[in-house]
Image (tube, rainbow, N blue to C red; front, side, top):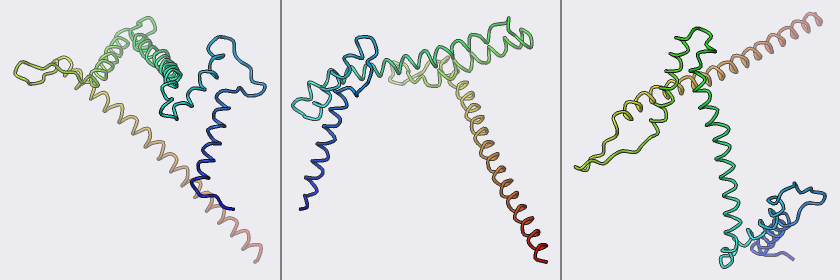
Length: 200
C-alpha cells in the first residue's frame, strides 16, 4: 500500500514537530540544570514557541519569542561592546601614552594623532545625516565632510592592504603548489632513471 505524497509529507512534518516539542520541553536524560532561575524556566518557556505554528494561537508564543530575541540581542550587543568597541577605544587611547614610547615622544604623539584622525574619519564616513536648509537643499556639516574625505582615504588604504595580504597569501600558496609539482616531476625522473639503469 502506497500513501500519497501529501500524507507522507504531513506525517513526517508531524513527527518532526513532535520531536521538536520533546526536545524543547523535556530535558535530556542525565542533563544537569545549572544554578539560577533563568535556566530552570528555559524548557517551560520554549514550549509555547510551538504555538507560533498555529495562527490562532500564535499570540501565546509572542512572550517567549520576545524573551529569546531580547536575550540574543543583549548577548550580541554586550559581546560587541566588551569584545570589540572597548578594546578598540583602549588601544586608541594607549597610542597617546608617552611613557611606553619606543622611538621617542614625538613619534608616539605623531602616531597617536594619525590614529585618532583615522578613527574619527572612518566613523564620520558612515555618518549619513544632513541638515535641510530653508530653500529645501540638503547640506552636511563642513567638519563632517572633511572627516569623511579623510576617512575615505584611510578606508582605501586599509582595503588595499587587505587585498595585498590576500593576494600575497594566494601567491604563496600557488608558488608552494608549483614547487610541489616540480618536486614530483623530479622524483618521477629519478625513478625513471633508476628503473632504466636497472633494466639496462
